[in-house]
Image (cartoon, rainbow, N blue to C red; front, side, top):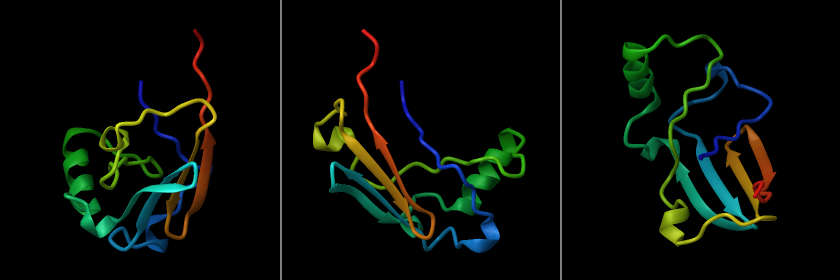
Length: 104
């Protein structure tokens, strides 16, 4: 099972530059990921080109890009109940999520 939290708002592309955004992930206040979108292996235009060749993209639909270096496997740590994840993207704000234990 994975996770892909998204915020309550989408920002139209005309208001942001997809190559100058900073993506940050904090776990319990510690920075685990911090990188600019300009460092992505494939830029947003290339991702849109590729995705639109294999599926229909609809206005307002999200396109997940992946993340900067430094995921959980890199730190040899899995999320635990009560961990607080904070995701931040330049100009879009911070989203906080508290982890809860799954049903047994």
